[in-house]
Image (cartoon, rainbow, N blue to C red; front, side, top):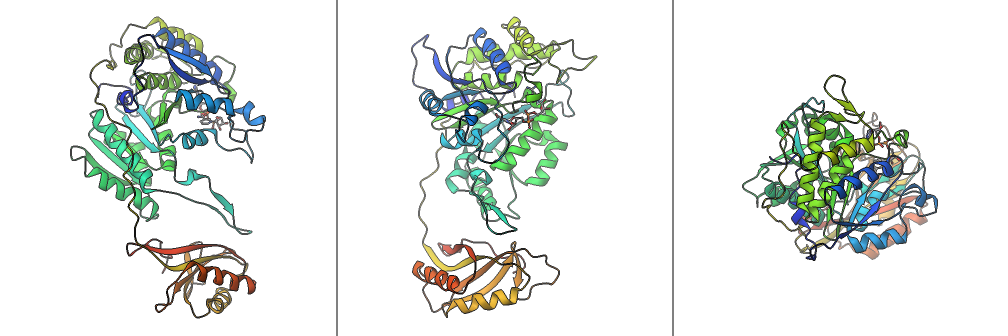
Length: 502
Ligand code: NAD
């Protein structure tokens, strides 16, 4: 691999309309909170000095906007700018503590359909200390689904739930993006991390789609790892990985671990890419304790700026900037987070680091490999998923979730059976997913949250009205049911999981 930031394909993945020579590309820019304003000013200064032809549209997001009553930290003017420019260069923001606030990042990613979060992670040994000098991994994280759907409920005195939403089109888009990215960048392997030994339907779908889509890329080696051992191996031996594609939550965790073991979270950039726009940012947060000290490392945001320049087709500026940055790192001009007595040459603050990069524009590193973005790069379109072919769906039962204190599974079963009214068989009751009736174990610890599974009797045809009638009978019997889930087959295959111990 030639590139230290491996994302030249991004330059082609979301082509902009042809611009007249000299027309500046409008970019929405937020200065953020904490260290945000310092590192954004430093980064913009370097970008412009490197020849970036961008028209900066400042937008306000973050802490002050939250405090003005916008629950996601973003107001209508900022939305208007983002939807028009379709390019967002974003400094980190502070999310206020406490309830009532939604994550700004998750809101922007999901509202604008930025489904792919691309995080290249590389070591810069011997200039930045790292246990893994050869580390060179790209993490492609799904950005819109999974537990980040943010659908949570308190259901009983004791139990809360968070819904994990995984769609086939969502899996297809991200997996295909990972394979296209690998192919366009000359990478040989794509590894998929899931927990499908436990979450057989949701993570199982991600794995299945990985196998299906992967079959279209015979030139690329494919591996599947259970996320826990995969993450452990990544931390111990990152050389065995090339591109990793993984659902949202695992990707969030794994990419921070990867950035940290490569050297510093202060060095890692990320791109959030979709069909209707892209957002570029550092992976770190607003580091409030460092704010106002001119000390923070602007490199993550600066390298995100390189990704943005590639994305908008300004490859010459991207290459100049990136090579000057590499030369600065190589010359031992380091901010405090990567400064090491003996190996670094000069400890500098945020603005002096930016000036050092500017002073090296036009130079290339001698030991680290220079980047080459000017040459021919392979284009790929941001993938869309195949249209969904509806399955033949059969309604065959219903899970009823009940709030009930105490350990009396037999008593609950008797009440639920009498509400069945000859239409259903009560086949099991679980508590936190473990079967406790019939034949539960006395050792199983119980909560006040029960799931009662009814299957329609073989001689009956189930319909929604019968489920509504069942709910009426449960209500009349004083059973505190908190939700129902329909049990369906799709083309004859069960669309629900079994109880543990069933
Ligand atoms: P953080 O990333 O801000 O800081 C974690 C640690 O990394 C701190 O020790 C900090 O000193 C160090 N660090 C981070 N960036 C650095 C840099 N550029 N140079 C040198 N050192 C750096 O994480 P946190 O403390 O958990 O979060 C602080 C705030 O940032 C919270 O409000 C959080 O919600 C927010 N946050 C925002 C984003 C974003 O806007 N994309 C991402 C993560 C966290």
